[in-house]
Image (cartoon, rainbow over all chains, first blue to last red; front, side, top):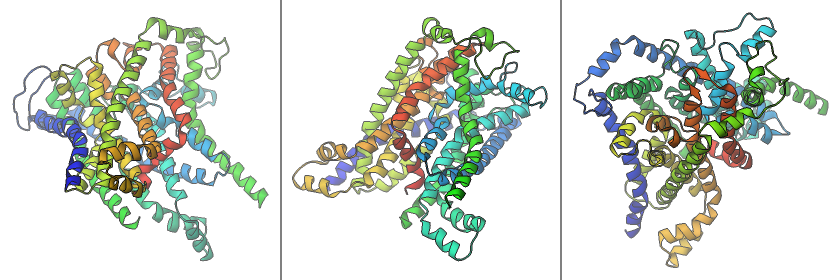
Length: 288
Length: 280
């Protein structure tokens, strides 16, 4: 009985901190989204007007599309390339630790700083990438950040660069944990390398694959840094994600209510992601 | 067999090389840019991949003499240390309580921790900006020290719960039979054994706060109160004029502490990274 009380006491500081820093702001955000709240001014309840205005707004529609495109394409690329890289790394015998350390660098170094290097690599006049293209004779170069479609492709590439290590290293940990006997048994049954991949590796990797995938979806859909540093949402507001548009409207434009309404579009993704993740984690516990 | 293995290794090396190039080139580019003279940097006829006209440290001296780089660095150290310390103390106690004591609601709370671990900071930065303003903390380092725990506490608690579960309970139970309280047991018996887990949590907290941009950008506008990442991103770019040499020098120097810590503790990093994904 006394132990119970100690339990509550030990958890209390964390509970209070998360109530103040997550639960309360979240409720505040819902309230803001239903009001015309501006920085420094009191807001009035206006119902769903913010959401109605957003649904008519072409920049928001573009942002909705961008966020979907950014998330789906980035995560798909990270998954395929990450799995490829993990499979390659698994076979490396000597120097695997060093290699793992190097591969993880883009993920360790703050994205806010490394994205600056990319910005410079995509510079309109001095892009080193365009210089390389010219040297190999592939035309005059690419308008990396000034053409809307190229700019979207560019922010996606940098996201892939940044997130690839996370996929590769987590999936590598998963690959290493698959018991060798399964491969032996499959080999005895006459399964070739491709069959072993499809019928042994992939099914056993599924829980980790699921966790990494969902985690990455949540982090990618809510991304801010890469777009903020590379394009600020430009050219002509064509590369905004929810977070960068909310920053522009809510803080730079001081319309907190509208900004909060935009960020709330992240919430459904979070709910679905968290629900599925919890189910995978729970199921894993039964087998552990 | 050895010949075949060698040939396989050669081919694997070839397959890995595009990945390595993709991974490392931006860092090489940062370094080269930061050491080049402006004349060579903006010379369209030069070969950009190498330094031909001599190495210069002018971009680095510019950072130290003409910008608030040193102040930002100090700010970052203060913010990261403060936020990490607060979060660690709260998380260690909570994680211990959740893994060792079964009380009503403990499962629910553990789930709450997991969910808050998934909450992205961009979902909350607008209401937090208003809370910071109301508390009168705008433009103060406290605004960051007190809000970074919103993502550090869930992360550390989740990580440490996983770690505490792997520690044997017997010694602790003996200590408590001998009359030690839960808190005394945690401090005297558990903490010394749990050091690797705590080191991992500390490292992650520090690097997460070091690179944080959204809150810093939102709550701080005075240039002398900015943490390092915010200062480099927001202050070294003036209008549309970019000082690429010093920008790259700044980004490189700002990453250095993280790289140093990472190089020393690579295994803890990898362990912490994969803990969430591989341990159920």
